Amino acid sequence: MTIVNTSTSAFYDRSLMSLQGLRAEAEELQANLASGQRLATSADDPVASSRLRQLARSNALSTIDTANAQRATSDLQLTDGALSSFAGYVTRVKELALQASTGTLTAAQRSSIGAEIAAIRQNVIGLANSRDATGHALFGGEAAGGAYVTDALGNATYIGTNSAGELPLGDGQTVSRGLTGPEFLTFAAAGGPQDLMAVMKTLGDALQGGSADPQAAAHDSLDLLDAGLEKISTAQSVVGSRLAWIELTNERRIDMNEMRAGEEAEVGGTDIAATVAKLQQTMTVLEASQASFAKLAQLSLFDVLR
Image (cartoon, rainbow, N blue to C red):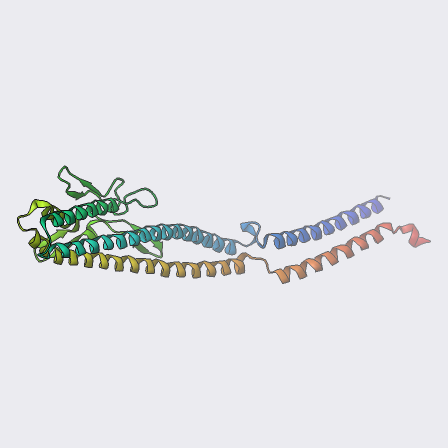
């Protein structure tokens, strides 16, 4: 009787363990299909798990690089728009200087032109103190405050840093996020270094009575204004090349992200077709095992003896 009890208990234990194993395997396969991942823990495949962690770190760094690229793009686009406005102001001042350089104007007319140039210069100073998306001076480099201040005489002085700052774009690549004011508002001319806002102030003052020969002052300013306009045009080209460089790195980053996504799917992703087939096979075996267990559990030695 003890032998019968022991054999019966062992039969039930083995059958239950087998059914539980099959059910656990089916649940794991179903979980893999639901999550799209074949690895639940690092123990499932240590090598694959290590590679997935490396890919995850690369994706995190790529997210940071993308944010840097977006910030640099925003600042450079603001810079490009401001440079176009600067060019428009300088072009207008040049037109006014050309008018003032003719001998047919009266002193009052030249004074009126000088007043308009002075107003334009104030707009230029305001534009030079534009803010970026974070509220910092767009042309002040990495300084927290403004880019320019004016003294009691109206002279504008740059108070920003020497560079606009670099932002990393990934793979050791960086880009300058903008320009400082002196990078495009100062230029070299025959008489030495020149400041565009100082040129405008000198011209405006000369036309409003600050020079004994305002006509000559207007004529002399034309070459300086041309040089200043050329410096702004060069700055626009620099900004355009930086925007193109960011776009190129963005395209490369997208390609790398797609490659990592493909590798992640290959290393840790679930093979849908193979997993579905294995799940169907496991469910078939489980159902057959359950049916067999039910049949065998109904058998008795006394039935055989009869």
